[in-house]
Length: 490
Image (cartoon, rainbow, N blue to C red; front, side, top):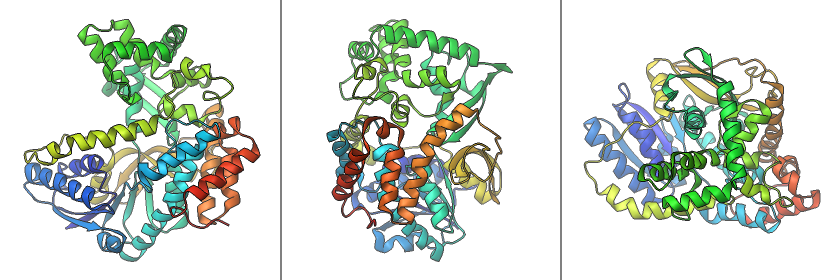
């Protein structure tokens, strides 16, 4: 019986998506699942949910086991053919709160803070050491297993595992799957060009990969997309940008604390209820993506990750000296803490109803995980966007970069596609993010405090806001505040 270990199983909804997909996939249904977490309650919640899906839709064919705490981690990994990683080190409290509050005291505002920037840097510093401990366990008890990494910061964590251990690792995200539906939906082109009928090519780095080609029935869609995005973005910005979007959402009945990724759904509901006109609903969806549409206009290609992410990966949009930009581009500052609070409250409200539903069933998600596991186990090939070290896959990005490229997966492993060179402006922007990622990995592998400072100093958003002395002082305060979550840096 093939064994799959799921680390961070207390992420109940995500565990349901990945493992529910697995249990519905022909060829994977007779498996052994080892659920591992350090939170007893969340682990039990996930086990109950996955077991219910196993019984209801898989005739109980899978064997599901629970493993609690670091003392049982090696046992959870013992004999695993493949390992799925979804751990979050430090949680919302205390670590995510710290990642936002201390930079904010220095005047450095963030939106998500999980990829680069000060928040992404310190998430790497506390996460990668734990993942390397897991890799050491895997080297002993399941050295041939593939590790499917879902944990952010994706590039730094995946690169750190590949450079700091012998474990075969690939990084997975869902921003590539969401790219075409997001672009077409936000511009109101999704009925004219259904996403399933659109052909595309995407490559770059995680959360900053580029839609290099977008076609429908052999026709290039970029001219129409660029014209429409430019005209609609100008209209929304002229009407007040974020202020206009918030006014429309309030009219549609949206609660004040709703995360920005739900704004398009409220716009649709407002249109269907008659609270918003079709034009006003379109203004909301366009207004949710103003940063990416600006990047499309300036760099020529659409980015995979959302506007709230992109705003903090660059030096141009969140600026203390130009506060009007926040409304002009509708940038949701402190968005990730808002999402965390909503998710915590939402889970508390739905937990019992969800777990007490003995008839619960799962609908397949758009995650790559089950398809990749199926390909590795059965040999039936699949295609996925994967994060790997740049062994010649993108010519004008450095070899020590972790890149996101289309890849074929089969029983022999992963086979990335050679892209060639990205458009130079796109590659140049990627390189500004790669530098911080590479230095964050170096900081962990060499336990180097100087590398922490260098990573922070080279971060585009931080460098646009803070001086050298401020940046170093900020890092020192964060290192002190994260005591107990970080290794010693020298």
